[in-house]
Image (cartoon, rainbow, N blue to C red; front, side, top):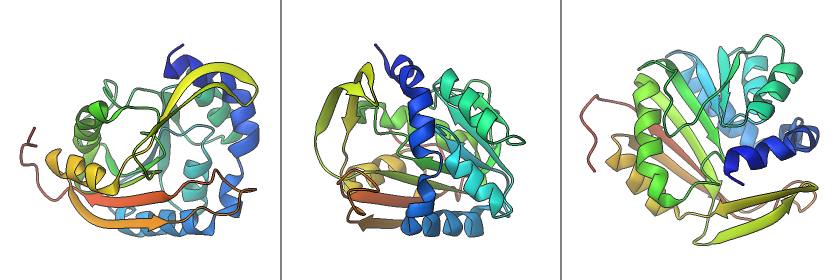
Length: 216
């Protein structure tokens, strides 16, 4: 079972569990407010790897022009049902074939790389840079570490998913190589166990300041 099939299988349970999660995560909402301040004047903000659309919903409530993209078609259907008026579409951030260059002013990629190995990072980061406008901002979050956790069961469904942890230095270096300018790297300890998994988190703000060719 691949990542898309795994999230299709858990989409309903995932939406029920995480649709309102930001109400218990003041640090995350503070980071999203900061993204809105920085990117909102540049263009629309995409919730990349949107799941049930909770990030897009929060940003829209704050007055942003938003949309969402997710690999899972089932997730997209739940996001559209829960958030009428926000456009969501299915897409693979390694190859965003239906999204034109320089479409977005900002991208919120909340834990969107956790199921992808580090070998996919350059492909993903290059695509994210392509669809951002000059002056646009990326907010990328992930679990901090150097391990892979495999699960065969998730939210009551049989899956085969790997959850990848990354060091902030490796992600920062990958973003720089893809042509981003990394502005802020922020780490935090986990919130209460009742709120989230007990892992250290990283938040990276990166910006497009030129259209120079990325290095590989």
